[in-house]
Image: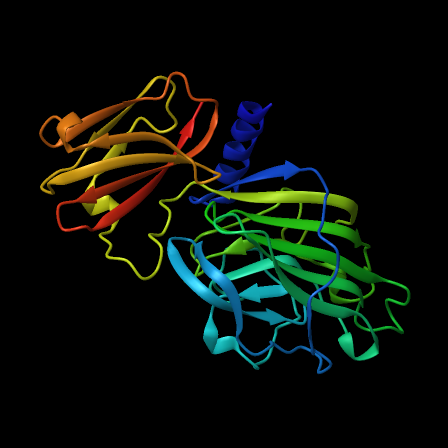
Length: 313
């Protein structure tokens, strides 16, 4: 099932020009709508900057804070803080004219002044915490045109894996306003890469209840903030990826001291000290590992680290 879902996600990603994320359906299982309440009573507004609680990697860059838009948008662009959150949807993602560095869960014109609530909370333990943003029963704009329509949805950011999940409890259509448009997707800081859940990009009309999707990152993960780092693309190459039996590592001009491999729970499954390396190359036997996502960390003699993600098929 995992392999099948991965292959489906790759197809969706290619069609959506994501280049960095697979889009995979997952079981609807949101967290409780509890936590710190955010005031968004002014229509079409972004919140102040909010701390995530851990470094989160989005399209290759690490962030420790974000802003929440009243129209179902989260952005890592600090310049948006307390500014205007757009409501008009006229073009598909990715596009530079649309909110950048953004997650749309979904983006739809909402109207907090007449009801609804947004809150955020940090769940779990290091290194597997989740930052959760919940929109609860937020009315559509305007109540007179889209009377009785509201959005209940939740965005989850995962520590370590840097995956993103959107869980939607209720998202009805309202074709009488903004042509009924809404987008569930993500795009990078330049508007050049992005991907939407299949069938949920502009100008398609859609509605759903009790469903969930994961944006699963396949880009190089960010080295945690606060330690020495070298961009992994310059530090070492890793192939094949996905892998079945063996992974080859070439360290180029850097003198490698150690290679470690951990699973998604942070548990070390492989540890290759210096005496196991052969010059600037090494191999890791992954034939007995269960299929899934793993993280390979290479450390050089100066203590610099670089991390790559690998999929074991």
